[in-house]
Length: 131
Image (cartoon, rainbow, N blue to C red; front, side, top):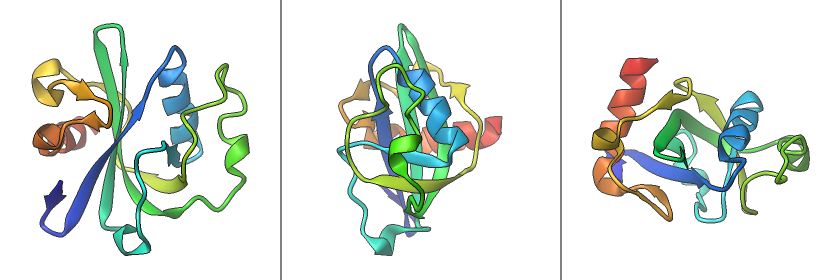
């Protein structure tokens, strides 16, 4: 989904440690999954909605992708019980919001790639409003 030259993508963390992995990634300013593959042209013009569902609650935070992660990505999620999100490219992100529970009517159904493109603008606005 694109908003006036800005791409909005969604990263989905799943499994029993999804929220823990989201927190660890946010702490290290990193995001990873196997579904998103960005070109360098998208850096700085890509917003990331990082989302996970725990029971009936959906949690998300928003960030701006600023490039490839420069540190040792293996150490980001080394404290996680499940060794972190699925393998894939690790990107550095500048957090734009804290982690918030997002109401179902805002985020819509969560799919294999996270928030459906039709709901991403609403989630971006919600997270920015929440801070």
